[in-house]
Image (cartoon, rainbow, N blue to C red):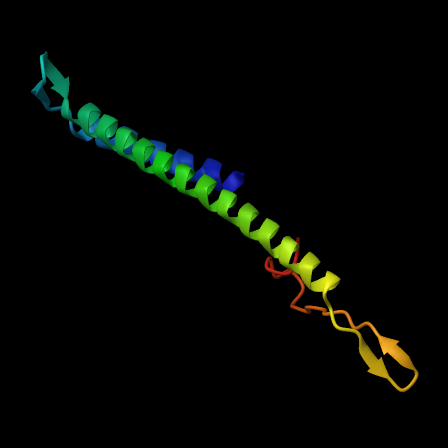
Length: 115
């Protein structure tokens, strides 16, 4: 939280300095829109904000897609585990049948093993 706030303040300060040092105005034409005088710094900042927004949108969509894929894979894994448990061969020992369970051990804090 604090790191994001500090980063935002630093980036905001750089943007203010950039805007104050680049006061040149330029005419803008886009499709049927015409703007006679627009600050070059403002134009660049708006372009950056639009670009970052588009990139963030695509990253968000990709993240949702990956989350859905993970859920589908976890459901498939659960189904396969259930099938394995149903059809698990019973191992025999001299004292009778043994039902061995498979365990997965990993390092503490490893996200792969922490659900």
